[in-house]
Amino acid sequence: VQLQASGGGLVQAGGSLRLSCLASGNIFSISDMGWYRQAPGKWREKVALIGSGGLTDYADSMKGRFTISRDNDKKTVDLQMNSLKPEDTAVYFCKIHGRRTMFASSRQYWGQGTLVTVSS
Image: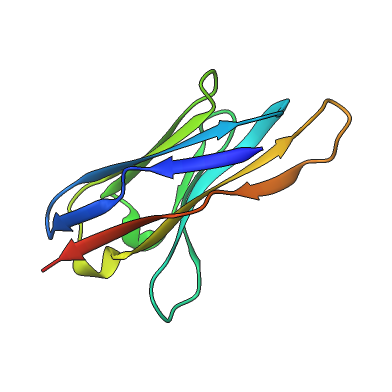
C-alpha cells in the first residue's frame, strides 16, 4: 500500500491550498483517513480525520479554516486549507487505516509528506 500526497507549496498568509492523497496498491478496505502535520522542532500533530461514513474531526486551530473530504471509490483524501497562517507551515502527512485483505488486520499507512510554507 502506498500513499502519495500532493498539493503542497508556498503561499502567502490568507491564501489557500488543497492537499490530496491517493492510496494505491493492494488494499481491500479503508476505514479512517486523515492528515497530520509536523513543523520544525515540533511533534507531529493531528490536523483532521474523516471516517468511512464521512464523520470528521478537526484540531481546534483548524476548525473553520480547513475541510477534509474523501472519495471512497478513488481512495483519496483531500484537505482544503483556507485562511492560511504562517504557523500552518509544516510538512503535511496523510494517514489511513486499512486492510490489505478481508481477513487481514487493520493497520495504519503513512504518506511521505508534502511541504506547506506560508509566508507572512
